[in-house]
Length: 120
Length: 142
Image 1 (cartoon, each protein chain N blue to C red):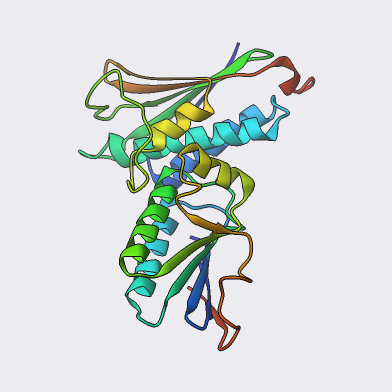
Image 2: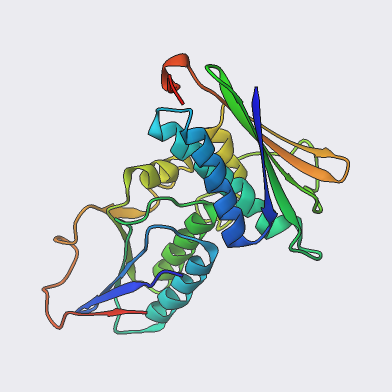
């Protein structure tokens, strides 16, 4: 399984999805995101999808679950820069407007203080 | 018509590689990357469906892709398993509501393919995906 890259930026956390989103990785992302949702210090969660080449319905289900849980926990949830074919797949299932999709973090991230990164 | 038979154990990584292998074969005949991407995604969904649902009662079982290429006209795949099958036939294919976490796989395939059929054939479940492709999308030489 490819590693997950995590970047902390104030009360925001960005999790970068690797190129291929298989079932094992979907589970790992769910576990990691659930930790963030339960962490009161995290208010903003971002999935960096810029490297992801293909997403299937299992991966889409994970995204839906994360958005729903974030909404219930009153946390913001963004998808960052999905690759055009991945965005097309979200359009096919009519979820492109369901998610908050951004091309840049400039307008959503707090000031870059206490930034740190890790790989899990 | 040229036929290829690709078969493996219905486990996540093996089934994904099987789908990619089938898409790679098509990539040798089709010039349009979007078509190859769509076919790969359709097979990704079909194989994942077998892995997740076909052999719940005692797997992992196997998954077979029979790939047929009629150059200049169409290519098609039959994704076959020997598992429990769907509860009802014909299978109802529709999009899931936005908040649903499951139930989009067959709908995605139906939107990517020219034709999709799911049937029970004896002890086999057969998911038939057909892609009608116009002449200029085919590579001239192989």
